[in-house]
Every structure is written in C-alpha cells, then in structure tokens.
Image 1 (cartoon, rainbow over the protein chains, first blue to last red):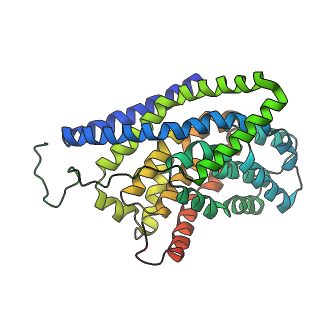
Image 2 (cartoon, helix red, strand yellow):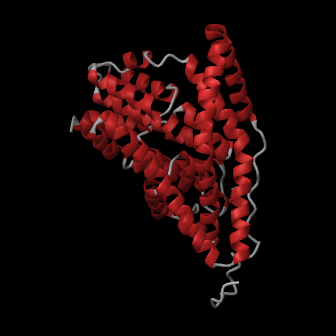
Length: 168
Length: 196
C-alpha cells in the first residue's frame, strides 16, 4: 500500500472512532467507559486468534505457487474457465497485491474478461487468507461458513452478466 | 448521566445491553492451526530454518502494523453497538427488515472506513444487537465487493480504471442478492423462533 493510502485509511478509521466515541461519551460517562471496555476486551480476546492467522498465513502462502493461477484464467476457456477462476480466487495466497496482480497478468496475456471478473469476485468473497486471518477470528464460525455457502453462485452470475453484456 | 429528557422505555444506556459471548476455540481454529503447522514443516524442508525465520519476522512486522487498527476496529464495533438503539437495529436490520434492511447494510458496507479490521468487528457487533444473518452477509459482501477502500488502494492502480469500474458495476447487485439468499436459506434451516 502506498504511504498516502495507508494514511488515508488510518485517518478515516481513527476519525470514525473519535466521532463515535464522542457520541457515546455524550450519553454519559458510565456508558462510554463500559463500551470502551467492551471494545478493549474484544481486542484482547481477538489478538491470540489473529496471531495464529497473521503468523500462519505467511507460511501457507509460501507453499502455494501463485504463478500457476495465471494459466487457469486463459482466453476462450468458457464456463470451465470461470469455474477454474472461481477456485483460483479462493485459494490465491497473500493479500490484495498478489490477487489483483494475478488478475492483471491474466488480462495482459489474453485472459477472458468474464473469467478475470469471476476470479476477482471469487477472491473478494472467498480468499482463504482473509477468511483465516479476519473473518473466522471475529465472526461466529457458523456465520462464516453460511456466508461463504450462500455467496457461491455469485462469481458465476457476474461472469454470466459479463458474457451477456460484453466488454465495457 | 446526560441531562436529556429520558424515554423511560429507553434503557440502552443501562448495563442491560446483551454482553457479547466470547468465542471459544472451535474446530475452525484447530483446522487453521493444523494447516499452519503443515505449511511450516513444508517451508522448513524446502528452505531450512532460515526460510522459517524469514517468514516469521516479516509476518511479525505485519502483525505489529495491524494491531493498532484491530484495536480501532474493536472500539468502532463497540461504539456502534452502543450508539445505535437496539430495538431500532432489530427493526432496520433484523429478519423482518426486508429489502430496506439489505439496502441499508449494503450502503453501510460500501462506506465503512478502514479494512477487514473494521468490517468484521462491526458486523459481529451488529449480529449481537439484533441484525440477522442476511443483513450481516449483505454488509460483509458489500464491503468486500464494492467498498471503496480496497478499490482505491489496490485495484485501481493494479488493474486500471476501466476494469475496476466494470467489475464494481457488475458487483453492485451481489450484496443484496447474497443477503436475500442468506435470509431465505436461513429461514428454511431455522423455521420460526429457533433463531439465536
């Protein structure tokens, strides 16, 4: 991430915390302290879970070769290509740089737009690293699996729309 | 206490708020731990101990960088749960909130600042104060697909404006559809009254 993007994120983030904290404060000291403590307790509880995710994700990423994914998004690959792209999106290791770079390379070497769209959307919905690192530690597991299951049709739906409408 | 005239029915500033249950270590975490252990072993066999420590240090650096943001996200979740009246959340984002509830969560997910360290704590907080799975799904999916943060920071520079806008346009209906699908499926799995 560029330093200015990181700064932008931090400013909007802590700015929102400050604004909401002020709103809570105006409702009374006791309420403010209680909810600040609630948030701090959540933080303390989440740190061990995130530790496993952050430390572990680097190792998982290191054993998955990301180069092979570009081949899966080849041109004229039709619905099989969309399926391959959806699986590739879910198992892509690493953060957004790797995911989007694979998509960019695929587009450059002639990957089909519907396949690359399906890839990016699948990555956004299912990338295992985000699930492991963030979603599972914070949300009830039941919710995470349910959310992933009902999201399954959508990379295909977006690819179908892209095939029907064509390129922009 | 604030000197505002208080609605006697409004007890949201009392300690009546539902305490969030802390998650126990579940099968998902055990599964992840096993996956990580196998990966560490594979890295060790391939690159030796040097490869293992190199990844460890770069991951620790990443960890230090995100910790303050995680704290901000947790505080944000707690404050939002405190500021929004709970009866209003269950009306606006609960199982009976209809299309309007899904639209609200989608809009909320699209404008939520920060990153994964904000959306998941906020979604978890909303679930505990009355939002249903459908609304929470719309929120998470909206953030991940049409949230501006990642698009500006990563997708635009790497994939270009045309592709990014096209991808976002195709994604616009997805959070609402996913939330609606979630509601329908959840309703079939848990017919009336078995929620929570």
